[in-house]
Length: 263
Image (cartoon, rainbow, N blue to C red; front, side, top):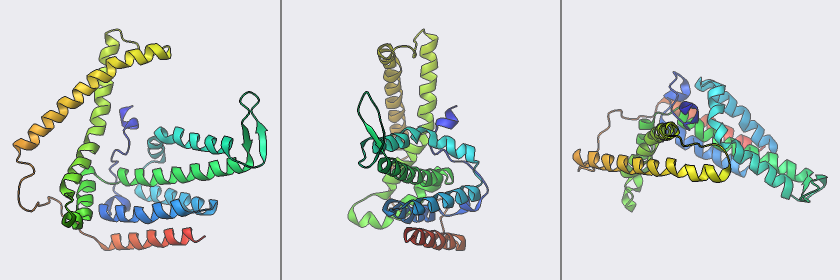
């Protein structure tokens, strides 16, 4: 259950997408996001949807596993659809008697359009996380941001924060599940009326905050004991290098994004 809820948890596979340099994935994600955001017709979004299906297939990630990662965002997409459907102007299809809201043809069309756009943006971002190990992701991001050191930005610390965040997401899920089971064994019920559920939620939230702060203190002591941030240039266990496949992938994605946007 927790594996299904853990967003963007790395899914190891031996595929072409997994072998790409993480910097290539970050850089190719930019034109995709720009083209999807600026696209103004359904044909553009449908083309990117087909491209997404092809990339998922190439990554060898099961479609069922990928769609489980999207479940947490379905309510946002559905809310976007209904928001445009009920509050959009145009020819009314039908009217809800009690509240007086009208569902319009243009509103439904816009709801589908923006819902699909949101789905594509989330899907491509999740795909990058599923196909990139957290350590490679932080190393790639740090190397991309390295030129900004002249402006005073510390990319190594930013990458460390990202790595810690990605590492602690599954840990926090496991901790919350452990606390919930412990409180349920003590007779706390998390079901029933909304008022009682909110009141009992404090028995879950307060221990969770205490656990998070304790883990943060332990992590800070561990970093300090290891001499972080240290001095001198940092070395890498796995040195990232662009390969021919990265160049081909970048050119392919940029060409597809440009061509699809011009449709």
